[in-house]
Image (cartoon, rainbow, N blue to C red; front, side, top):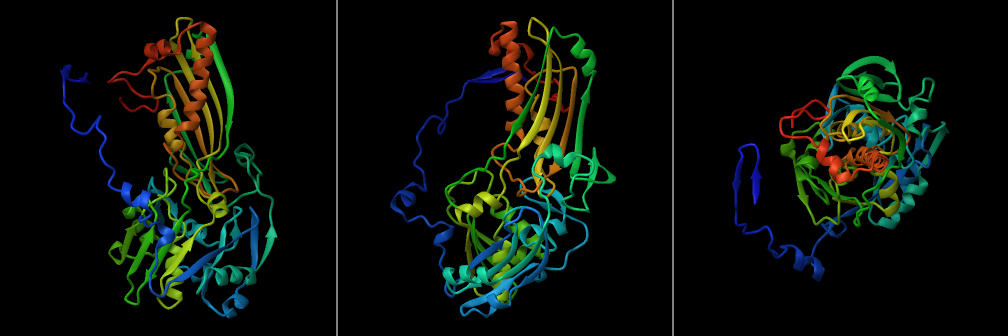
Length: 430
């Protein structure tokens, strides 16, 4: 039964798939062990890659010496930031949201140049004839650091005078660059009506503060990638990913080559939940393959590497305020959101702004959201990026209001629920 309210037509449909139990096409392979995952890829001449990662969350790199690792028998290639392509001018689209970021940030995320900005930040990578030789080679790479104070809390990072993660980041206010150097990469604001007037009309006003920690998707299979950079310049890749075309585009952006020169072969994926949209090992495997004489290179993260260095969802600080009358009508809402971006700009604060009050019909709205840099891995997509934090805060306050006015929360939602034609809290029509 479908209720097409916009056309006031009621139709009945007999479904052929919904409600049935179709056979999973991948079921037999997975229960019998025939399914091939990223770590199962085997190609003639395969080398094994490993990444040297920073033990510090924030530090200058004073010196990197790879000579001992390069001299180790069985080591075929060692790469550092010096092996990366020349940095093109201008921004590049990145990840699931295709957010524009400077090319320099994309390169430094894969191999740190002058500075590490989170624990686990890649500093160098090695390819060898066995995984054990590759791991031994990592211990032979000498890195001298000048340790800097890390900043982990978004509110501390927002303060004037806080240690800067990047001296090139300036705050963008509603899309306009202010020129102010800061750990606040962006400020987004939504104002509808007069929230102060709305709060004066309320019989009850609840204001609460919330903190959420970064949460990792925790998929069973670690990130992995195998790459072969052929002598003719074509790059072939095998990886567990959630979108072969997205991976292809990110690698093309990294090397500034046409997508026609890259072929991505997805293999079985042991979970992703958004976390396997962003690439981490693919560019490094390709670099090592080229430097190792066009041998294929396979890289598989350990569980520790996954949790320390791949994108969790944002941690956040939120202050949310809501006013309502005794009969359950919302009169005004207000929110302050400080979302952790990690070490590079790009938190999903926009998702929070668009959705946190979206279920409700509201006349008075005021939202301020901030994209804040902290010394943690850059955040990544994870099941409705940015939405869950803010929705948790809003619905907690709704429950408290309902308890105080003696109203069933379902009735409260029905009374304030947005209808077709209403404008959502970010100003767009429903």
